[in-house]
Image (tube, rainbow, N blue to C red; front, top):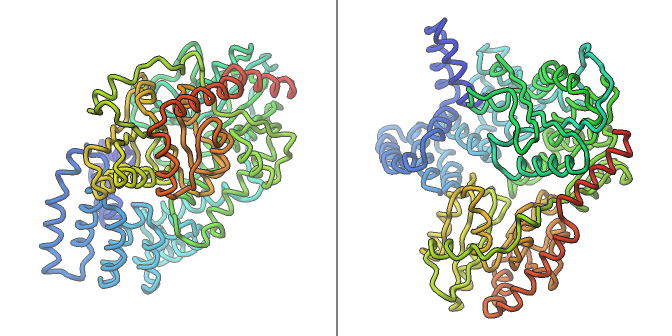
Length: 605
């Protein structure tokens, strides 16, 4: 349960049972102190969190003088390092100093490591400890986060048998429900639905989230898909995951939005804050979303990844005798793998194996599969999906909207760039696999060669603080700017301010397979694009024709590739024109709309 959901549940309970609510708070702090501390700090504004760095570090050091083997003093110091953007350093300190702590101290520090998505060093700290209930409770939660779900279930079961606690029971229930959803061939049962004749052309989509509440690459693509389908005479209705947007804290949201004439239908989920585990959520979604979908009289059901959306729509498709088109936009298990670089053997753990198998099974059960690129299609074929039932519908842009208009000047002025300085840049969600550290180090190499360059990174995310810290460590100073999140209407101006758009994605499986949207937008705006030499990126950028490629994770090679472009605006412009020509020919929403129409027609939708 997230802290926001916990607070909402507490608020409801406090009105009828204040003593019980208080006991729940005490229990949560006692059993999961690191979870509570990290979540509370995460709710504070960035500036407030940064002001806490020195006080937390100071208090932690002082308390450690009188309690050197306790976990809390070290926990405060670790949190301070993390808030300062030094998470990797904090993890190293936790791993090194955690071994000197008492058993209770190890459990506290291991809990923090798990909270910041470092469950494997956390597991190393607690593995040697005795199998007593308080250890098993923490170790079971850490095994779950580390992907060892079956071992987590066994350890939590032992802990619950010896010392029944609500927090242990809740975690065990969630682990068991996550495992149940990944049993081979599992689908939820469907109650009686009022079946009506399908409405010709009606395509009912199922989305994780949507406009106007969430503005991100996922929601923007979903909206562009709907608009492109409508232009082809299709009647799209976008249904969002059960409980959205209320579960995001938007208590006043309605059950329907209309954006550019596209209807978005939201299904309320009163009491859903008490539901844990994937299988239970999927069953609840079928029960509550099913009647809504049936009333829309779909001719086609169109879920997007991940697998829980597919499970909902596959079950409803069978009940309503309606074809299902599964849109695979990514592989959740590969994204999870990318969050744990350097950890060996993760392809063999329960979470990865079961998720991969379930995604493949869902895709194979669908009547047709849509995906974003040839690398993703090849991966799906390896999972057992017939190639003839897969259509690539790539990331695309509206080339009438994304066209060069010379709007970059004011942004360059805002960044304080002098005449002649070449600006490298990237626009993206800032998550570790984007590899922005490679871009920063490449800029450092160019500066060391005496080149007049700067870099701008547009976006926000979990890796931003660490990359800002690295930029400072590299001495980039005013040559590196992190803008944070930028309003959507300003994004094109930032693209046009950038001379060389660099996509520095790491050589990880998720990056080798999944094609991002941002390079396509940059190409449509005639930017000179330089990308890591990964298969998914090579589908978009042809070396020496529509841009350049460099060896992934190699900042020196990046600098070598970029340096000749610095003095050659003509070549940069030539690459930009060729890139836009490729986008106009292959990656427009009008073309994608025709692809969807062909798929639906073949299925009788």
